[in-house]
Length: 489
Image (cartoon, rainbow, N blue to C red; front, side, top):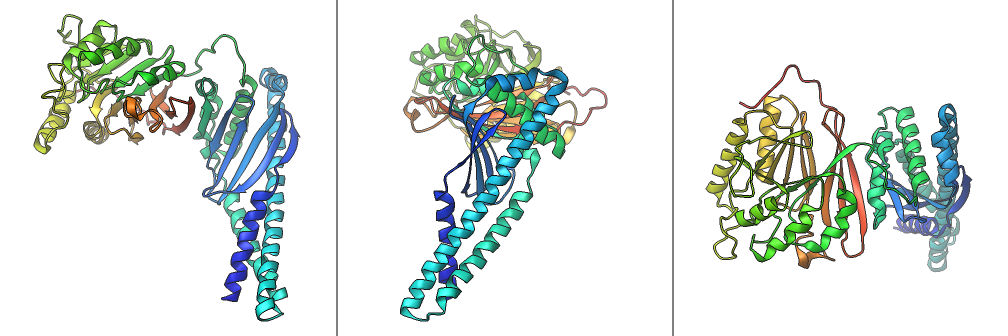
């Protein structure tokens, strides 16, 4: 029991000492950086730039330790020079790589020293208490026990940190405030392009960090997107308050709205349509179980590309009969929700399907997809249950990759299965107007390559009231080449 007491006090002392230790400041090529190593629930590396209030966070190891790098000052000219120096750029980045590696290594060694010192102090305290009430030999046994336990903890933690998975640097979480996150994502393509091996991953990650810091705070014309990206959103639920927060992410991009633009599709809610139509270039939508045909017709008249199972909805209320539409160079098909009402009133609008009705509607959806005249690149269907069933059928049959976009459950997710990918952006409307301040506005950015294949997805969450935002990047596996062409049957 006395041994456990001293061991516990030693560990407590080590944690207190580690938290109390001040960050260590280092001069690097990009400016001055503070290195702080603190206890954490899971291992992470966090790079923060307070000048522009943005940061990048990754979890490349499992040890309960966080390494925090905070750039207190920035030399943007040096960073830009490293990027523009042609053949000498690799040498400049190699210098920065060495500086950051040394800074982190020194920070870890310093943290280990503080941990051991804190453990020793904790053990001395425990041994002194025991000696007062019991045996004097614990004045030595107490700190010895605590130091041994603390040393073991340091060794185990060091072993965990040493198993650094550099591929995790390709899947960071970006966080920022206001307009900074969309700019940060615009310039993060070097991180996305990082290779699998140690040299490629680490080098590309450092190059990406250099570029991000080089453009941090830069004003003037908006940079052109490096990779083609599309926005996936659903479940707006008539919450116009979130639209201004989305503009920086959607400007100039194709926006897919996968149902539930409104709460009940009433005439009163049609006022949301004008703002929705201005979100992207173009905006493509399908109905959800909360929508109505008059509401979707209003959207079509405002310029939104409204897709139904029988084709694009026209301003006169008919459809063009083309089940697969060409939108921004993509073959796109959309399924209107079976709970979409013909009228726009609260009365009589049943939002959910009974069990058998759900199963019947899901089979109708799968039969509709199988009967399409050509294989679409993108499919929009509001209900996640329908989307996941399609994903499983696609994986079983193979063929050309299909991007399945969905919503309904207000849960962000990315599900690759074979060459196909399902993306659910969550609830862009933060659960409705009354959810602002309590629920985050969620949507997804899907990055496409030159072959229009999804290579990565950023799951974005924005707090509409404050503008605080974060984005977690998911890098998708490269699909295997497809022999021949596979069309819909």
